[in-house]
Length: 136
Image (cartoon, rainbow, N blue to C red):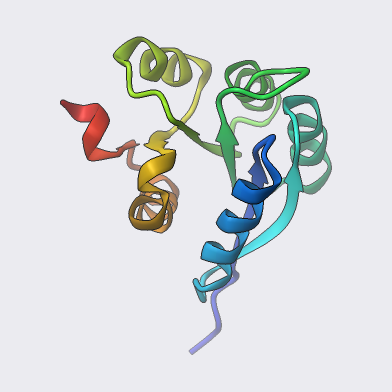
């Protein structure tokens, strides 16, 4: 049996503590590895272009270039890179905006512990993922 390639993940969030927490969560997953982090949307786009990760975990509200615009830029150039957006906001208009920009899923930061890994696996499998709080 051949060993599967780990999913390569880029984590973009302007708060260092959140980036570190997400990296620590993903380090527990045997099928995923964080290849880079980004502290703003411009750096996220640049690193996505450079590293071509499988998935970008993207905060919505970031300096220089927000997560929605960063998602739009990444998807316009590299449609094969999947984007999972995250935010503290659960308003349907926010979810609609990220999906229109090309994201494959949306989770709330408060649910990252339970939703992050299942969401990444779901979008890689071709599904669209919404945490339960935004489906209501």
